Length: 100
Image (cartoon, rainbow, N blue to C red; front, side):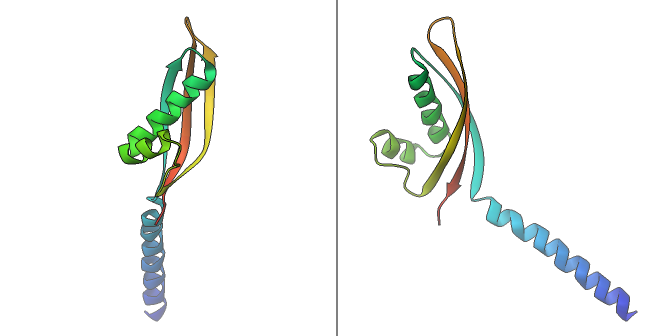
């Protein structure tokens, strides 16, 4: 009986730990976007702009003026670009984290 109770408590503790972990993980999220422009660099800029707009227009406005992304980390971006009919098309993704 005592062993069953200990096993039950261990299962409850493990379940609680699993459910507690996502609360911390919710502060980071992955986003993806696409950008099109005449140059590859501008297409990547369009991707970055779309990523930030999808999260928070306020940080986009601050970022576009050259003042970073206060309140968020805007980690490394991954791009896949190719020449389009006119200009470039890039798809990109990034992990953003809300800073506490």
